[in-house]
Length: 351
Image 1 (cartoon, one colour):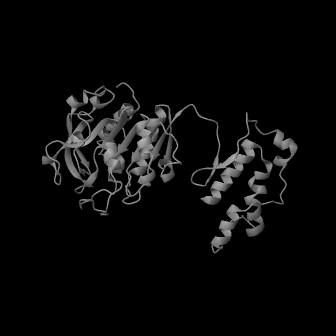
Image 2 (cartoon, rainbow, N blue to C red):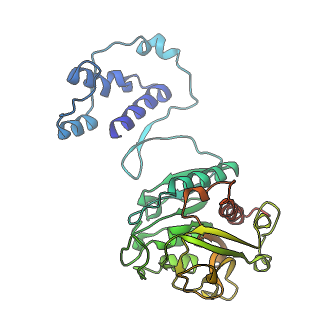
């Protein structure tokens, strides 16, 4: 991957910055031909230390390309300003680009403990929603995106199925983001981050290593029973306090329906957390319809809140264990509808 990343950076420097010496045939690829011959592919038994040295070395190649002649360079498409190579926070080569007028959303997928197989589908679905709303989604599991001082100022942060110690809570940037009135959207297992133990089955009650998740969302994961069928109950009257209920949002979701999912128990009822009226529960679970619930008659599973003095919008959907949940069609479409409505809520769209 490192070699391919370097090759991409060289092509970008050649075609966009018109740096003739950066062409792969005069740089990394030239050495590959000289070192390995034939197809310029390292042998299966190549020394890993040697490959690492080659990836970081500067090369001068023996090949002449017509494209690198003055006439060839003059024929290249001209850009308004040269594009230079820089290093990003992860120390990987990156291409600088002009500032985009689009707002930027981080779709954060770090999983340092249990890995949900649905995360790719969830990140893809969220990214498509963001793109359709004029946002540029940045999908990353790089902790530096949410740690100070390296964290950029995103317009929206989406936490997708995270688990474990996903960044250093002593340097976290979520609080700064919320204090600026910027929204956060959380999906399914993100509330299982920063737990004080591990249990792949999810059955063992676990505590928290920090209060960050509780502070942001008003609840923190404790455990869950095995996936099973259960009844989801829409709290439509509660949602009326917020801009919910339109035909394109919660209005499309039945007042009650059966779902097959992984139903989380939380340490606190988010409706009882923080200031009065701070959290609005939009959907609950009927614990009489499945086994393993521990939160009583109004077991919260989807909710929203306004956080802090600048009323930063926060939305959480606890449904979505399976990849099929992140689709606008089929029997699991209601989870996708919750997420779509939540996206519009945090972005301030009138529903």
